[in-house]
Length: 213
Figure 1 (tube, one colour):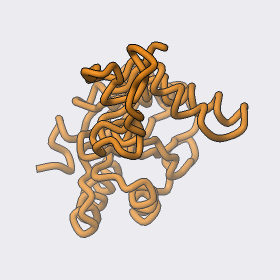
Figure 2: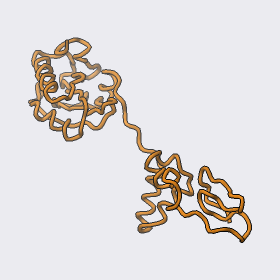
Figure 3: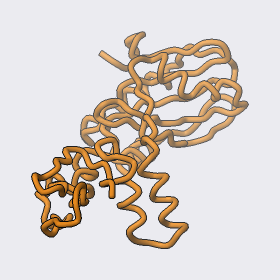
Figure 4: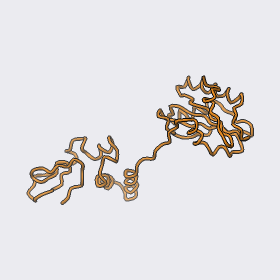
């Protein structure tokens, strides 16, 4: 009988694997070591929790998910364990932020959105804050930071479009940027940038030092 391919399997002098307890030799064997008797760091479930699915063999993963549950639930769990988690997009520049919201350039009304970021500047989500008319969208700091708090964001980038196609910031754009930054300091959530999306270009108020020191 072949054992299940556990990492670190070591065949004992009498033919039984110390780790998985499978018989590797003759029939005259002492009783094997059970999973519960293994050190915690060697148990498949504990290794899954501490090191992820990559630390387990395919047989170990299947053994974990086939042990309990309905057939449908087991299949879904097996797929979840075997597939790597999706990678979140990281924002490193104003261009990255503009690319995330590039679809806003074709909108015929002004939309104000907030990109929610983790401490590593990974995108947690993009939330609509308000939708306005042809020239402006009403923005209140409460709505911006409500979404940030809901998603436990460490920082945000605010983005809005100019339906005219021209991304040059107005005086109101600069004023709302300063207002949001002041509110962010009180909330402990940094406003990293304010991006304005035009038809063929974008403007970063941080790069232009408008509303930012």
